[in-house]
Length: 388
View 1 (cartoon, rainbow, N blue to C red):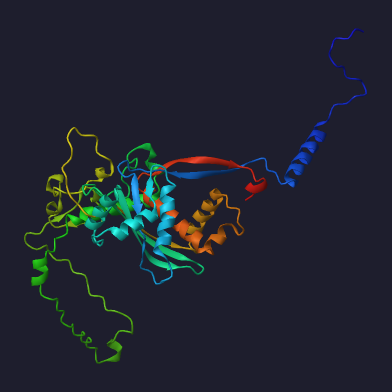
View 2 (view 1 turned 180 degrees about the vertical axis):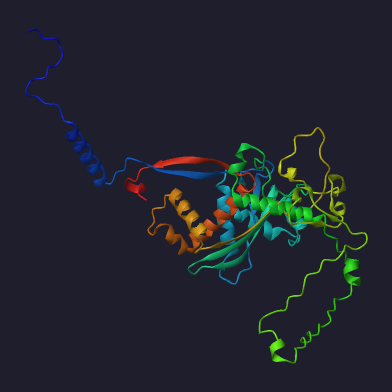
């Protein structure tokens, strides 16, 4: 028979059966797992940060003030760690700490108030200066650290940037905003709104106000007890007075709310006196729409001088906090540190602990104000140096 060019199967040649094929697949999977390989990668999302302030690019970090009970902690050491973290973020240009120290030595003005820090920022020719302080520090395990950092702009007309400013409120991406930023934004708005409802205490009023004198309240006399023992109440039992329904006073009305008709709740008094419309709000009432930047205008805004920091953030970090250690493990994973000990060793080495606290403090400061970029997708197979 002539050859057709196709291989022919001999009668004595048999194909691999289905049970045999399954056995081979199981054996191959066992061999792969035994060699330490994995068919599925480790999927992680690395957070990315950026500078959300176009007008704040060139900054300077001053040596931190050590207000903790540990006199051995150097403020320059913490400022250097914070400076390195700021410089690692795209969009920032940080003045070297050595240049800042030399400028401090030749500066003749005071540095104690916001106006002084703004003037010093103009002296350094930077957009803002970062003034930080360590309010608490303990290097022994579990370590802890508290940082407070204020940003002062060289331009005194820059307004404070509160948490929640510039975030996608009212859009589909609002659900991506973390819960803690929601809380911080609501608290910041409430603080600014309550400032308009708080009476101003001037120096003259404070000097004329007499000191508060509280008269001692005499102890109430014990209620008389009946003479006969059988008429006395047992210990711990109170006598309940009968409930009496009285007619309303002249001029007082009892109003049943329409949505509560048929219920047990009553709205008493003149409810209209508590009604507050938008036309009764003060002129400087902070609106929630202030979290969204204003559109461009054809005219420049008025120059309003203020000496408060444009950014303020204070945070405490504790080495035995579950959320802190979880973020530390993620931080160690992306650093690809080859030193022995894993992320737990960062709690033993004070230099690494301070560096991570500065990173976490700066990350929260920027993320709460729109500084979070799209995360980077990382796929890693646990091979060689990537073994986790």
